[in-house]
Image (cartoon, rainbow, N blue to C red; front, side):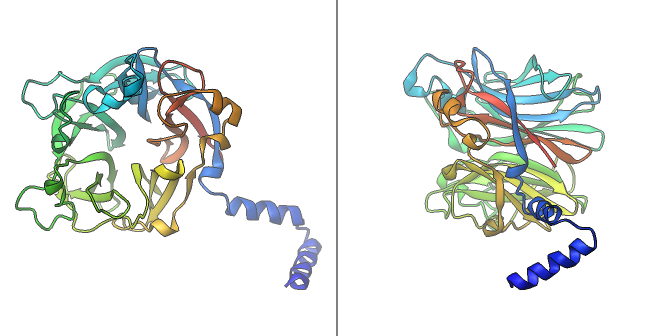
Length: 361
């Protein structure tokens, strides 16, 4: 084999191709999504809030708009300084910047606990924002519930939707577009959510090449392989009705969450957090109905691969020193930046923050 490679290299040298060029090309081919990421900076933090899932998009005004979940900071170490109450206190805020690297300015709070009328489905936490653009409309998905700090109402979690043609203008409230399967929807793969007393969360939306709308969401119940997994609900129209899928999407054996779904050519990609390894995974699918966990590539590495380990070690730690809830900024359909909150704050601020990583080619 070595003699064969030597002959090939000699022949290529005769053709003017250098060995280092071959090596460089080979390395480029084998580069994972995670290997292409370069840490830039902390871009969103607040003295009064933990900043968590931050979903970015380019607006028609040429600025970057970010929709972030944020949780009030409380001076109580036992609740991770208020973070543990996300299920009741989280809100969704709008930030904007003239360029990707910021600075980002707070615009307003779009959704917050207590905003809805008493008894409504969304009186509690507003969480998991996911922003995308479909046609001429910007579409914001989020999770809301009827929880309070003293009553974590897991069965009330539903996925809501808002839309607008201008991110600087008013939003149309579409209400909730997905909840746990109804009593008679026994063919839904996620039907056990009913017995488990759980709702739906972690949404990601894709306008599929076939024209339909694919709404990905998390399911979780005791005894489920991987502790949780994902299902898709499909609709002919953006606002629904969405029909729960009848099969499991991912054969994951480990706990994964927080999907971001996008197109790479004709391939449907899903970037998720690989929780127990403190990393991310990138899964691919030809049809968006099945993702092979065993074929996943590294989506992002541990935090210390991008930021000096001593800086991470000395950072203010409120959860875990790792990236989570990955969201991508796309330009002409191509991912250019990763927005990821982290459980530690390398600026040693009073709460969690959002980090920016650039995707190099």
